[in-house]
Amino acid sequence: MSRKKSNSGLRFQPAGGNRTAQVPVGKKQRLQIERLSGDGRGIAFIEGRTWFVSGALGGEEVEARVLGARGKVVEARLERVFQASPERREAPCKHYDRCGGCNLQHLPHEGQLALKQRLLAEQLQRVAGLQPEEWAAPLSGPEFGYRRRARVAVRWDVKARQLEVGFRAEASQDIIAIDDCAVLVQPLQSILRHLPTVLRSLGKPQALGHVELFSGTAEALLVRHVAPLPDDDLARLKAFCEQANAQLWLQGEGQPAPVDAAAKLGFALEPWGLELAWRPGDFVQVNAQVNSLMIQQALSWLAPQADERVLDLFCGLGNFALPLARQAREVVAVEGVQAMVERAADNARNNQVHNARFFQADLSQPLAGAGWVAEGFSAVLLDPPRDGAFEVVQGIHRLGAKRLVYVSCNPATLARDAQVLAGQGYRLKRAGILDMFPQTAHVEAMALFEAG
Image (cartoon, rainbow, N blue to C red; front, side, top):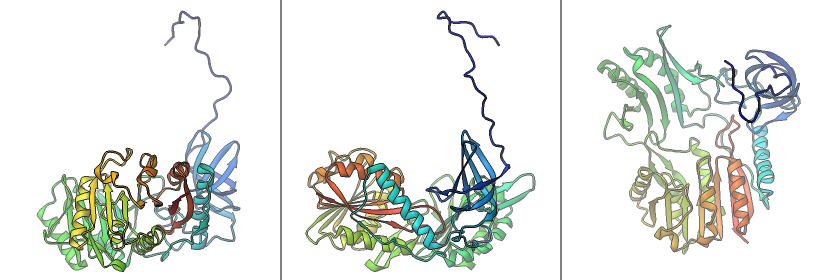
């Protein structure tokens, strides 16, 4: 179709030069890996493109297969190692070459910790121009058998008339059949081992959405269904859970609910003699041991005194607020979701914690106007989601807090917010990583700021 000339006389013209052909998916390429990226993939440069190769290590010569390409960036997966790094180890998991879950099993644990430490340091320096006065040793627990929560993918293959059960493949919607996952805690490994068989035995497997596993004060199996479950299928699921000594939870259009209305589900914070109720869908740290170490370190760094008032932002179910209340005069805990505020308040009452108060507030906005803000605080703890707490920290100096502990699941937003805090006169006293997700490149961190 022709285009009319505009009155200005301008014409549509080609930009000039040749359009660079995309690298086709499936193509194999020999590469020299320069270093590791922040997400644990090897980085290589060839013909003006940057390749990110999962499964590769710095200094290696490898063959990689293209998973996708966009512009000058190519995403690929290791196919063959010609020259291995001295750090390389055999991945312990038999599903490692396809499963998208644990992308660093080829790197020994000490190397994983070093990578995460480097990423945190680089982000703080590059984004905020900061380095802590002291680096804390990494907080870590067992390499395997740590994960107390997992989502299992379920999909009915119409053509094959077969139910697929497992975990998602890397960079794909494919489901990898897995009945043995080494990062799960032992009770969940046992459930997962037999789960595919019982799900495939159902008369209407097409009704299944996904399945979640949880281990805490009890084991639980949540079945998300997109259509009503036949009575026979429900009976099979009940029998399976009874044999596995696990609670059965169901979720249709509404909220998750236990089949046995009297069932209680939660997790313990043993060092503080606390037990927090939890429901599928609520946020909970998946690594119980590192979670306890994290709380202990946060309390040690924040050092709340018996006469002090402490603010806990993004409080969730009370994971930090209730232990803080054991040491401080008063804890004010704030969360964005009203249902979570109510559950946190219930957890306080059920644990006989009477000096913690819970409030709902939009934490994507600056703190202002609420009565609990005006009284001020001696110390503040923040545990925001991946987006960080940019708006909240803008005027946090007005609260009068001398100490602030920031728990982060994203070093990039931690560094961004650290720059804002530094601009308000806070010094970065201490920082360190939390190895919440061994065998992955996911970095969690903690930083202590003190007023100058």
